[in-house]
Image (cartoon, rainbow, N blue to C red; front, side):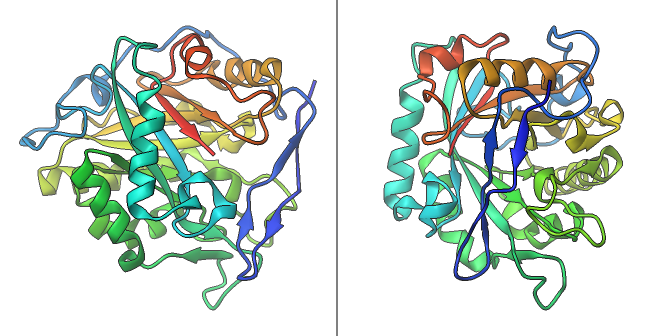
Amino acid sequence: MARVRSNLGVLLAGGALVGSAVTGSVLVGTAATGPTTPAAPVASQAATPAGSTTELPGGGTRVFAAKTYVALYGHPGSRSLGVLGEQGTAATIRRAKRVAARYEGHTGRTVVPALEIIATVASKGAGKDGDYSNETPVRRLRPLVNAAGRAGVYVVLDLQPGRATFLSQAKRYRALLRKPHVGLALDPEWRLKPGQRHLRQIGSVRAAEVNDVADWLAGLTRREGLPQKMLLLHQFRTSMIKKRSSLDASHPEVAMVIQMDGFGSRAAKRATWRAIRAGAPKGIVFGWKNFYDEDRPTWSPRATMRVNPEPRWVSYQ
């Protein structure tokens, strides 16, 4: 059976693409095979980056050491791109803490509030650089990133690269990634091949391109003496990450997490969760996404934490 991620996007006046919708009930793509039990930790989850002493929000220098993250997703100043942009900086920080606090008592781990900030936004037009992606200047993101750091809120910068590579876009945000509380997210849905356009197909990325980003991020973390960095991968179709079995999660400086992005009925989300987790490479943990409008119904913190295995990252859109 197949769940169809349909090409229903909303275009902003500036040409940014706002999400897409799902119809049907089950995952699109070739079914994954292999065990559905959690993979055993490897270096990326177990080791502490050498020389790092600065602690992460929630304590320690390892991303997932007895911690679960609860995040708001979106783009600053844009209500259409997610809940993060529905209010100003101070109110966003307060809301992130409030949403995360609801998870306390539903997990034995420390709950860390977080923000997933869309740094590059998929675009209808090619733009001057021809990549169909609007890159937000660092100066526009810095106020929210800095406020989050002061408040003990973790930040992930999300990339929707169009025809650019994930690595070339990640390097644009080197100044922000030098901060101890800032990690990175890659969204293959918006990764285009030559000749492709957004909303005509679901994008995808080769594992080799993800590994290039992990190598670079590990090197930056090592050189700067930073605590471990989160590298989050969005996925709701098995075909979105090509040759996923070859993902390299061995860098002690990088903690890799795959976020299940499916929405719809409870049965549909559970089916997507099982399919996305099947056959996962060692050393990768899993995250979950809740949608206020598209889920039927929106999952409560209690229901979310009863998912097996318990998600280590929960994002709200």
